[in-house]
Length: 152
Image (cartoon, rainbow, N blue to C red):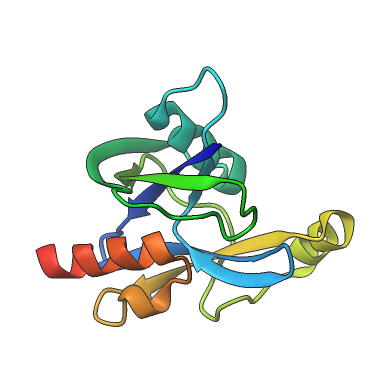
């Protein structure tokens, strides 16, 4: 069984990379914004939907960056293989979602979500010179972060 995930790399004018800090299934994870492809949905539409759901942000999906080209088992379900697809994303409007400067700095509203669902997330930018594969948690994200640093 496969789980297809679609993620966006959003770099702002200050050369900072947007990441999502999440508490999910008992783990703290820093990853790129995005999520799971739904049945009947294209990958670019998925990414647009995910940004809207997570940040109430309209984005333009740009150039394809990377698609998983090796076997990666899901960190959450060992019966699923993960295929992740990464695109550049550009904000089409100012970001209104709360942005943090410290990892996992969840606000009151985000803690209410956690108390209801057991999961929550917040967002922050990482300066380009501090950004690397070490700043993200998931194995495929690490590959993409290192790939981006090599190309730019």
